[in-house]
Image (cartoon, rainbow, N blue to C red; front, side):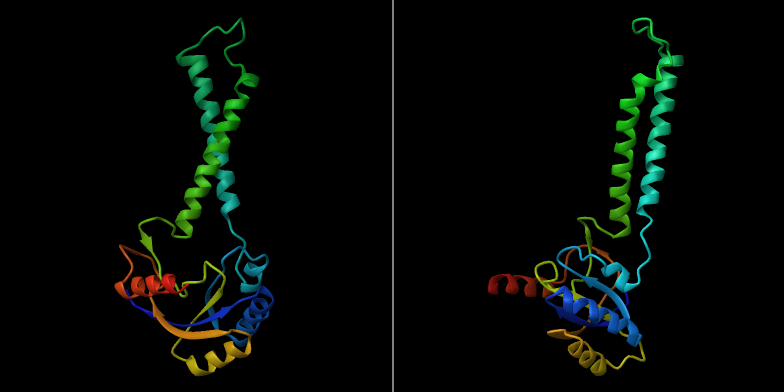
Length: 196
């Protein structure tokens, strides 16, 4: 895979990160992503990301679960294996509501989790580049993608003026890959853990 060049800035507080994101976007730089150790409310709007369509997928999975449960139960208890439960009619919809509800919730929950993992490329066997090892600990990391026209020195100075306490330049693959991390990156990870 082709590697791209990134300038990475680290921030310690949300109060510094939000104005920095707005300044970077106003200056016309392309933000690849911002990695935070916890969910930051409003960051998606500051980055200009569109609203997720995961709730639409959840609705479709839920409707599929409702339709599947209702059609299977009605077919089984009215056509395939009709049983007499104390003189109740074969199509006893009020008695089926708990099962239909549970199957709807099950299909919606499992479907949304799998869809989320697919969209975010999350799986134990998929590997992605880590821009900073403490991004999941206590740093907020902003990765800016460099183009052919980007002046890296100016971008580094811009990030430092915006409040980044650590700025560096990296080359990384933007896509996931199968397998293990590079030996160099594993060595850096082990050394960082020992120091911390």
